[in-house]
Image 1 (cartoon, helix red, strand yellow):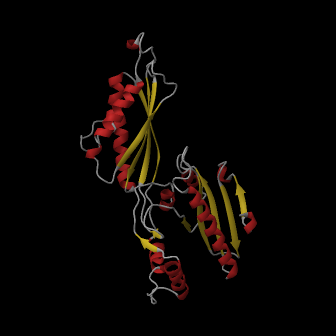
Image 2 (cartoon, rainbow, N blue to C red):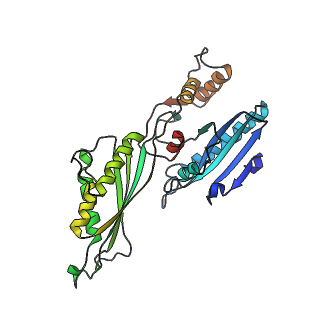
Image 3 (tube, one colour):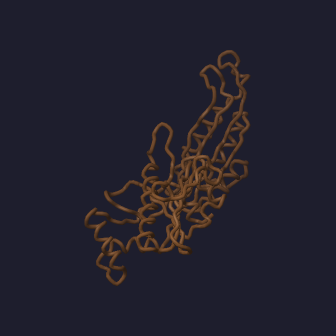
Length: 315
């Protein structure tokens, strides 16, 4: 970005792996924010397309900068390098540290499954992150198993309860997780086990209601069986096995709220015949993306989640 004339701030907002690149033309004007994510999945790599998100953000920022200069338009473009989307909520930290405060509008591209050469103005789901850590007592599994308190039993009981109750969940809700542990061996009663769960819902309001119920469930608050009984049994699992349990719920990723004006403009790009709705430049661009690159636009919602959803809420 420095080679393209941008001013770059490394370790931005106190985050070791975040950065900011900005370019200003004239004084006044609007401020466009762009995101370039930097992340990957352990053992898999760029399964969620962070490499593409990163380069799309860079290309967008450079293209806007060139347009501002070429047409002498006052304004500023800010490109943020945002880490830890998969685990850690990098954008949530940047929001708390006012990294987005100066922007009038903020954009990001995200790859996803669908028909060839398509773009989408759909939404993405909200997600909550819940951790339950069980503590028991180790013992030799053959010599004196009665001396132990099996934390893995508690985790497995809770996991099984969650799995068996998925049939009572609404189709657009998601609960999925894994069991982990430290220093396990088959001849030792496990004294620790950890459940890590992600809970997803289509909207912020639905997720907040769901998380509120989950927190109450973890604290053994009694809820109606059909409201969302899935994780209420985790505390019961701990008591059944004789374990203690620590519950942690971290700030959620909110659902993605699309900007209706920008979505309408994007749709207009593909309506090349609507001369009364779009300018000549937009119609020419639309003819290129539709004709030369055979691109189409669809409204495709995704059950996946992103911390950019919190940016779209401005919070």
